[in-house]
Image (cartoon, rainbow, N blue to C red; front, side, top):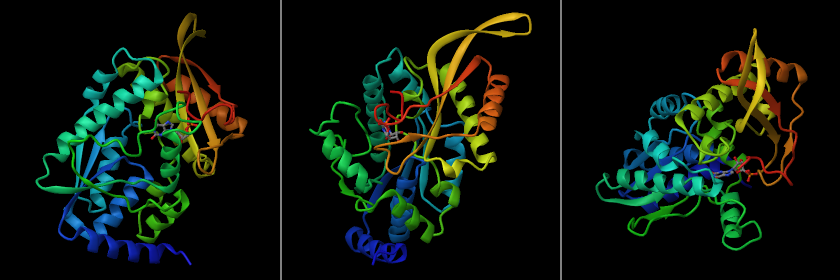
Length: 318
Ligand code: XMP
């Protein structure tokens, strides 16, 4: 029978045997999978695990600093790399969703390579790939969903990085990953985090990306997500976030007519992201959240709630 404790024991033993005194590099994303993979490797090889946490400037508000501190608190050998400007540059003028994904994927590989090359004699690349990623990437090479969206979680190593790959979570589902993390004593909030896409807020800002739009969306998203936490709703939702629409609409403030941005809120229930239902959030919660967003975030005068399920809609808007 599968138990998280036995899995940790076995995996740590296997990793020790396989890696010996080799150095391993791993990209942390702030998400559950890469964090749990890092903890397993840390248990097995300690300081020989070199973690790199890249700020692409498209993370949630304050996330880079807070999560970096959390990683350090866990004892991980982690380097934070703030590459926000580089990603914004790479995104300038792009509004096609797939072009934005590609630009972000390429910028990430460049930054990661540059950092990995600073680690002398590194032999392995560790990844937090889980079983559903394996399935999705198989279908992405030819299945019917191949051209819908390109995901960047799997594969994608440039040739000149001759690293061997180690993926300790490759056989696990998300809930098993969380149980493995819990059995290693990892923080509940970190393990309970909603999934967040690699391209981050870039695919929740419809159209082209600017620093100003990122900041507006970070502020809106923070009001929404903190509100979910305060209302005890965060753990009842599989994934939630806000979307900045490329639409201005008329509003009124005092005696003034406004013409400002509109945001959509999205919250879904799902088990694996392949299908999803919109969540029936309480009206009182939506009412308060809408007021808070419009009062606190300058430049937004309208909030709508997305009531579409997947399929036929997707979870993200891009
Ligand atoms: P969709 O929008 O396809 O999303 O219904 C399903 C799940 O995948 C996440 N997602 C991504 N994750 N890179 C990622 O790492 C991406 O390009 C990407 N696009 C969507 C999405 O947040 C949801 O959890």
